[in-house]
Structures are given as C-alpha cells and as structure tokens.
Amino acid sequence: MKKVKGINKYAKQFLSAVDLGEVPQGIEQLSAVAGLMKKDKNFRSLLTSPLFSYEEGSQVITYISGKLKMSEKTVKYLGYLLVSKVIHALPEIIETITLQYLEMKKRAKAIVTSPVHVSKEYEEKLAGSLKQVTGRDVDLEFVIDPSLLGGMRIKVGSTMYDSSIKGHLGLLRDKLIKG
Image (cartoon, rainbow, N blue to C red; front, side, top):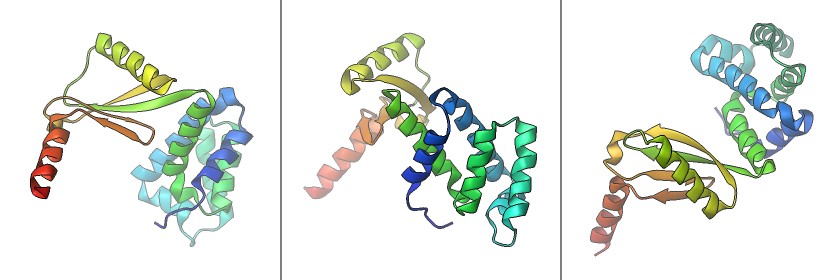
C-alpha cells in the first residue's frame, strides 16, 4: 500500500468531529474495523480496492457499524476515509488520533519493553518517574521481549530510553567497530 500524506489532517478531522469524551470509544470502534481489515483480506479488499464502488464500501461500513454498535459520528468518519481513499491507512490514523488525544488531555503514552513482567509496585514507580521526566501523566503499555536479556526499553513519543543489556551490547559493538 502507498504511504498516505497528511495523516495528521485525518486525525484532526476525527478529533474535531467527535466530542472529547467520546474519543476513547471512537478509537475503540475504529480499532475494531482496523482489526477486521487486518484479519480478513476480503473485507479489506471491499473497502480499499478500486474494483468496488463507494456505495458498496459504504454498505459494508453500514452493515459492520450495526453489528459493532458504532456511533453515528464514527460511521460518518469511516465514510469520509472511504471517499478520501485513505481507509487503508486506518491503523496509522488511529495511532495519530491517540497521540493527539493524549496531547490534548496533557497525557503521554509510554511503551515499556522488558524481558519479564514487572510488579505493580514497580509499575507505579516507573509511572511516577516518567511523570517527572515528561511533566505529564503517563499511560503505560507493557510489551514482553525476552531477547532484551535484562533492563528495559521505554519509548515516550519519539524519545527512546534504552537501559537493556541488548541495547548496551549494541553500543559496545558500535564503539569497538569504530575503534
């Protein structure tokens, strides 16, 4: 698929069409459609292929929206993406909507990758530390990656904090190669 320019524009369009309190529900509904597109190639084809008309795609969205009990605003937004021929970029658009929403709420999202599950106590300490660093409340998302061996990798926005053994070994390798 081709890369879509102006992802921010499409995210802002959603945020301006939906009340701030309805955004999490809208993101969840859009994510459900994106999940269906990822799982079912035929469904994705119905929405993205030029072989199918806008009317056919719209009928599919209307049918799915009834089954998923989607809000009217979310259905209209999906129709807008369909007309704009960018519905194939729905996962990227959802990610951008989420980041812009968190920015509006003065929150940040951190993706924490560690080799093992962390305790609730450590999770709270980590959230507090990241709040001090970012100046915002932080929503944590945990990913388990046993290849890190130890330590962890934390991504907040575009900033990466890497204290993993794997990361340190990579830096050491780079230093040895440079001489």
